[in-house]
Length: 224
Image 1: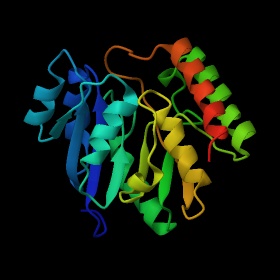
Image 2: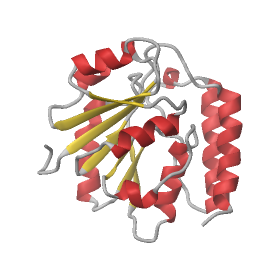
Image 3: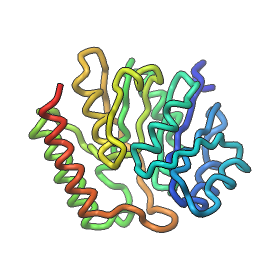
């Protein structure tokens, strides 16, 4: 526990056995529950996760959002922390982020990667894509946010059911933030983190996923 709160970490994974082998051992001892959402991996992701003490939730439907839905539905902790299984997000800042959420009496905290401390942690095309999508969020929703695509969030666990994000794909990340921002009773904030180069093979299909995310923003703007 951390400051009297049970902490659950949710990690969606597709073929991340190499990254998980480093990520899980790096989690702070205050983490009470580790949930790995195995998105139908073809490698040893599930086996590695179990051996390292994680609870594995299997999700056969392909998609970043589908994996997250399976993992988040299994949370039993009071505070949920999300991160990828590729080592890009800082496990060593989990307590720092949870502390910020509690100190500021926030409900949802998005970990911002920008400005990057390590310029080599993200290639140029990804930087441009993130900038376009974050600008799109500002234009469509009139709310400034530094990193609309961050995959690390810290929030009070009961909030997930209330936000109820719909996407089964990559737009899940931007959608959950936007739903938190638009909710009249949710206190939303951002906190800067150190972003690192990924471990293992890149799974993102940049242009396809980028256009899908942008189109999803437009559709989300047209709904309540």
